[in-house]
Length: 242
Image (tube, rainbow, N blue to C red; front, side):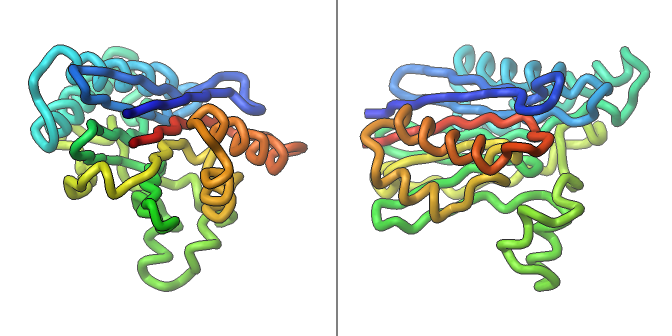
């Protein structure tokens, strides 16, 4: 059984440039979260359009796995670049993407940018997507530690996004794994994960009986840690499996 809960708030910003969509086809779900970039470059338009496109492609086609992601990312990039050209703001409108396909048997996810997916295992271990960002690159080169990403001055400088060029989007794809190896998933924008660490995510997961309860408890920490700051938009999708 798959259950989920969602939240999307503008934080301290005038416009919410985050978007998400939930698609269902048979017993399979596709959860997609986007964080628009560009401020006045209409990042909210890009994120909404791409989230809707992923939903439409999943529900209206029989594509799955890598074939689905290849098609959805390609069509999304084409749409955002077409919008850029129409508005004359080339490279001003972009969006991150993180997307999960899951059913009772298997799951697979993909991402582009610094919106994250966490896959929590039944033994309290977890997997997470690695950001396409300057700080994540510095972690890989061992110049900073993993814990320094959240506070790094270049944490908002991403290296990959939808709408960067007209080539095939260089998204990252996970392996296909068995759903019963997982207990929960969390898809979230940087405005969410920057204000709550993995230790709290796990402890609150253990203390929650539903994705709604888990997400509510995490959001309280996000709001508490963001109090008095110019909070970014924050969006999250919590998914329970089994």
